[in-house]
Length: 217
Ligand SMILES: Cc1ncc(COP(=O)(O)OP(=O)(O)O)c(N)n1
Ligand SMILES: Cc1ncsc1CCOP(=O)(O)O
Ligand SMILES: [Mg+2]
Image 1: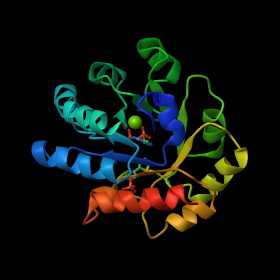
Image 2: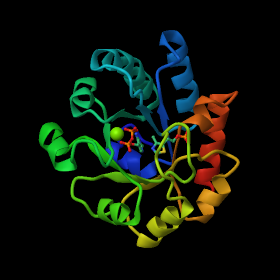
Image 3: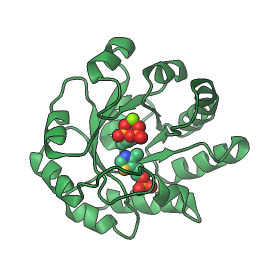
């Protein structure tokens, strides 16, 4: 991507979106982020559900520095105030989070807003809702990363692909290098992962392999 690319240009080009907590603290965290961003992650989100805002902001400084070094997008989960304070490129909102118009009223038009969807009507709505820049469909498989969330499976991915929307959308939930071909065959061209990268022996290599396969479909 050229240096002049906007956040929306970068989103349009994105294939691999990583959500990670901040268990890998300080120096180790920066090293981890450098490896995965150099490897092929296009968007990185700090997703640490138990963390209070002040601690989240502290960690986000490390994320923001890493994203700036690599020209990649920084995403914040759930909280518009934290996204604003961190200067994030992206705010991700689930069905139970702040409604998109409320987030837009706080943040304006420059930030990208993403939305989670878990059922066909939610995906169809997110594909056209004003103020939404991208959406995610899943979980494709039940996942310990989001306990208790019913998995609509690859049927929702097939449904979303059939919408033929121009809006970027990502498959999420239980995706790894072993089942990526099934996700691709269902019609997804972008994925969100947690464990496939954070729990890999070599996170940078895992990011690279995911990116390579998604970019050569
Ligand atoms: C990129 C991305 N996609 C989906 C989610 C899940 O959001 P949500 O359904 O609000 O669940 P929590 O992550 O908040 O537990 C996400 N965070 N990021
Ligand atoms: C946050 C979230 N929302 C739906 S599935 C999921 C977690 C996906 O994690 P993993 O890639 O480890 O299965
Ligand atoms: Mg949420």
